[in-house]
Image (cartoon, rainbow, N blue to C red; front, side, top):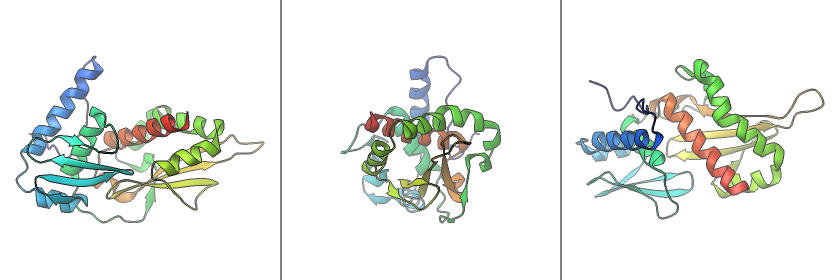
Length: 214
C-alpha cells in the first residue's frame, strides 16, 4: 500500500486539471483518515484549534478544516495545487528540527536527475525576473514575506511553511559570467516534502513573485 506521507505525484493523465483534482482528492482522503490531528499539527509546527489546523504559507494565514480537509486562506486565493501541497506537508511532516545546514536541489533525493527540470521550471524564470527589474523583485520578495539575508549578492529568506525555510539567492554576474540565481533548502526539508512537492512549492514562489513584479 502506498504511504501517503511519501508521495506528491500527479497521476499520469493528459488533462492537467483532472490530474490536479485527483491529487487533491487523494490528499484529502489521506488527511481525513488521520486519527491524531494534534500530533500532525505538532510535527508540522502548526496550531490545532478544533476543528481547524492553522499555519502560515509564506505570509498568508491558512486554515485546514479537519472535518472535510478544506484548505482556505483569508489572505489569498489558493490554487488546487497549493491546497494539495499544504495537505501533503501536514501528512509527511515528522517533526524533525530545522538543521540549519543548507543544501541545493541536486542534493535532494533524485535531485540530481531532476536538476535540469528544476532549472527550466523555476530558476530560469527567477533569474529573468532578477535581470529585468532587481529593485521591483526586491519589493515583491519582501511583500511576500521574504527577509533580506546575507548570502550571494542579493538574497531573501522565506518561511514557506512553519518548518520549511527557503533561501532565494542571486549573483549579479560580471563581464565574464552572466547573472545567476538559485533556491537553497535546509537539509531537513525532505522530512516535510518529497522532491516533487519541493519543486512545486518553488514554482509557487516563482509564480507569486512574477505576479507581484509585473
